[in-house]
Length: 260
Image (cartoon, rainbow, N blue to C red; front, side):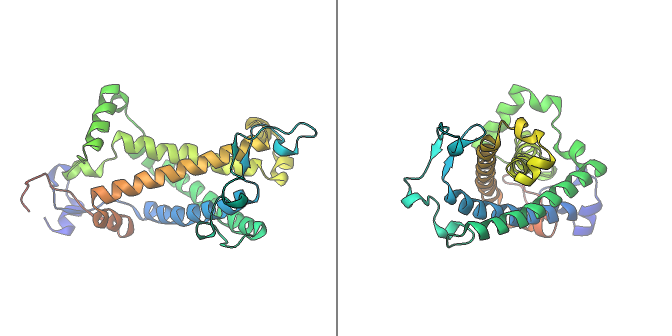
């Protein structure tokens, strides 16, 4: 089937090997904006963490008058108190002020991108149509089947490859509705200016130090998602997967032994 025919053909008529449109322009723009913004924020965030490599629960942390809160994570003994090396931070040389400038600038980009994407997804029906799990998909037997299929590296072929499976839906939903909003809201909670404007945020997260800990955990949740996502892209065929996220075109995988 040629490209034009494949683009307009009903899903039932598609077969492995057909080149079809997979990702809309809005999705592709959001994906790559997200990649840049999150990468810069993670690297600058590591430099900010290097300034005080401890995490606490509560309101005051080390600043509690007379009774500092104990740190649940203390990396001051790693690399002379700078646990993250320069090659993985922005800037590469220690500068808390510059790291904050990078972090806050790209935080605005990330926040606006998420807001725009969520509004578009709601208006277009993308969330309900593509990302919302169906009741049958949440059944333990269905979940276990998908886990076994992924563990055996058996990925969908033909038209089925165009649909998100339940593990993808849960992972993308977790990033879109938990990790990214969590990072933004906990970041706002750590800002003295936002504390004055929206004081209830501090109470929602149990204090500025708790918000800092949750901010860190959400960030490393994104790192975990990133590595799993990249591994799946490599195993599923990196050229085809990356091309679909750049151009929108995706070649449907063939069944084993299926002729061109």
